[in-house]
Length: 114
Image (cartoon, rainbow, N blue to C red; front, side, top):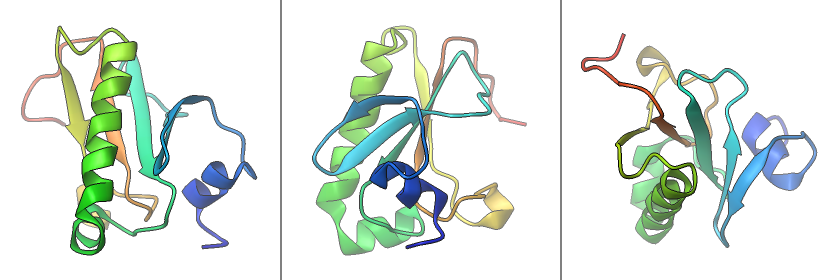
């Protein structure tokens, strides 16, 4: 999509601090981090939300989750614990409608979230 921020990051048209790439995904630091580790993992192909991604390409969703765990391990939070979040829909807090997983860690993450 030409107006999608994450598509522009994937294509290199918008700069981001890339921390990991795979054939189907790109992981980059969130510009407004909510935890010491806050990395977004997005598929290279545009899918508006996680429900649409799993319906169209479950293998890509599995790759996205695997890469999210690799990011957590590389960031040093896999052992202590990390949160993987998919916001789906505006009321859930999704602001960019290109599916993305938030990898959050590096501090206590109480439940329920704010």
